[in-house]
Amino acid sequence: MDNEELTLFRDMTRRALEQEISPNIEEWEAQHMVPRELWNTLGQAGLLCPDLPEEFGAAGTTPQVTFAIIEEMARMGFGGIASGYGIHSNIVAPYIEHFGTEEQKAQWLPKMVTGEVLGALAMTEPGAGSDVQSIRTNAVKDGDEWVLNGSKIFITNGMLADLIIVAAITDPGKGAKGTSLFLVDATLPGFERGKKIEKMGQHTSDTAELFFQDVRLPASALLGELNKGFVIMMTELPRERLGIAAQAVASAEGALDITVDYVLERKAFGQTIASFQNTRFTLADVKIEIAVNRAFYEKCADAYAQDKLSSEDAAMLKYASTEMQCKTIDQCLQMFGGYGYTIEYPISRFYTDARIQRIYGGTSEIMKELVARSILGR
Ligand SMILES: Cc1cc2nc3c(=O)[nH]c(=O)nc-3n(C[C@H](O)[C@H](O)[C@H](O)COP(=O)(O)OP(=O)(O)OC[C@H]3O[C@@H](n4cnc5c(N)ncnc54)[C@H](O)[C@@H]3O)c2cc1C
Picture 1 (cartoon, rainbow, N blue to C red):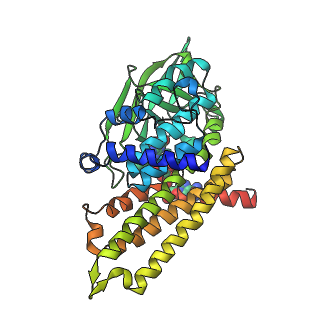
Picture 2 (cartoon, rainbow, N blue to C red):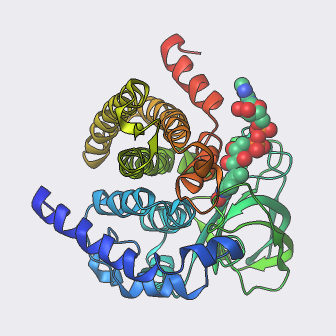
Picture 3 (cartoon, helix red, strand yellow):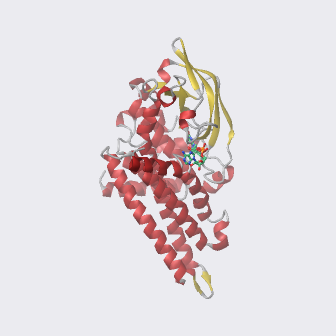
């Protein structure tokens, strides 16, 4: 897709989001949930998994288009929906596309494109977050089947997901080298969802605890090679981090836009807030920080398109862009005074939606560890 086509596509996406999400966002935020049908609606609008090949009913675009959709959602202040969307279209679908068998792809991908199937990825456990190698969920071979036991926490789309990619130990004692991934159909006996986890932000992304008790999986549920789960996760992480950066940069841009409108309107001491030097300099700082991060994000997106994005660059980008997002949105909120702290003003949602970005997909501290390792070689 050339730049002109991408611009048209962004306009089309914004119109679809204005029609389907804008009128409902306040209600869904208050309910802390989106209706399941939202995903079917996004599927009908051609917005789910656009970069999957056409044979699965998708548009067969480049991943750039998926990133653009994440950006438009984030720019409009739909951070929670952008996260759920990212898990489905930017993580789960590519895992299956890149590592699934032909049978697995045919079974799941067309339904992910229509929204009939919503995807989730379950790595984190109560005792294993940053230290994901410590997971205890395990799968034991029994004849032709696998028997899955364990639990996962903080799983995005967990309440509504129809398909969950679950990381489990298949060779105990071998850590990363004994971990595999499974495609778990949420209708299987033994699978249960805990209650929805209440969060400080991203209310339109549901987050759940998941339980697996003697869930019997067919041999065909194994995704990729046995004991290669970590290799797959590491391979896909740069893309996941790029998606988070797309959200970070566009969300900061959206926050700046609404702040500019506000400071031009709001008056204090007989003049608009925009006329105070502090406002002008703050907005300039925000704009500069966003521009620098956008440039690095686009450089990394181009590298990804050429299959050249390194895990260090992805980690640097995830760290820089999400720290920038939180800082600049905080600066923007300050311009709103007390109104910025109220739910009535969307800047408050930009603010609360942003905070998790420095934690999920690998915390800022883990990103710095990865970068340090690339400098020091250990
Ligand atoms: C809203 C939300 C959505 C999520 N979605 C998903 C999902 O869809 N799927 C999924 O699998 N997980 C998901 N997660 C989990 C998320 O990825 C983890 O919360 C995150 O990786 C951190 O793990 P933890 O919470 O166990 O924190 P911990 O690992 O306990 O970290 C606590 C603190 O210690 C620091 N720390 C840990 N190790 C080191 C170290 N070696 N050096 C320096 N500092 C360190 C951390 O940076 C952090 O500041 C989600 C979480 C949330 C809150």
